Length: 359
Image (cartoon, rainbow, N blue to C red; front, top):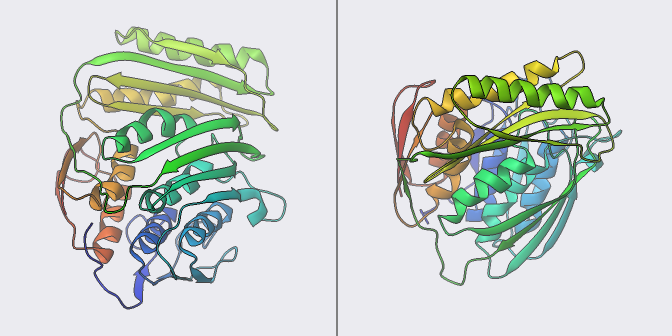
């Protein structure tokens, strides 16, 4: 693992680059992992609802519990947070409910909370269990199925051992979903390995589902038909299931998983009131096609999520991505504030590119 860049209080500008919640999550993840006290200012300052929201507070709590951090500023709407770990990451049983962070509840993303905790829990001596209640399939975050199908298989190749299970679905705005995760800590002196993920190989299969809860069946069917027809028109033979999960509120989505010889990618379209079922399917298909035509190994979301574990591995990594996003570049900036890890990014923002991680 790279050395801590600064043993003193590290101050970060939360409005840098993409300026969203990813800066907060990556910062507290690295602070917990490296034992680095930090202060974040201007948290989500340019957002319509600036400052910490329920999901962000729960992510802070998840990281803080792992390292028994002393935290100030962890309140709804706060734009400044101080986080000071008092011990190395410790394995254990943890439980978090995003709804408890805000009066009236929340459908904040369970997936993002899980991703905040998984890396510190990996660098512990034992096994951990973590239960997270909230939104499992909500916009602007990876759904549960993305974690299970894409994220975890990718980080497993680095040496992270974790599993995740879905007990209840949770849609926006009601939430109420529940995921369970188990993370096996590295043995004492253990480390993560780098990876070369440049070629993804041929497409093995394209699968997915149309999902609807507490809404008419015709929405379920229209989403599935539209996704199938668009993909068939492009020469693919998709297998799209129709599922009706139980949930506390209404929700709808189309999810596509592309399995290649050496990598997987996934794409989701979400419904909302007034949005046509066909549009939900079109969004998922368009995202898949945009990725598939580039030939890159990782989709834009995985590239963003992959950068943290590769940055604390023992050896260098190289991977290609179908789009260099502002999220990716901002995450790189955060990591460089903490560590001596260096990144070479070949390509411009918004384009296909390659990332080389020098640890």
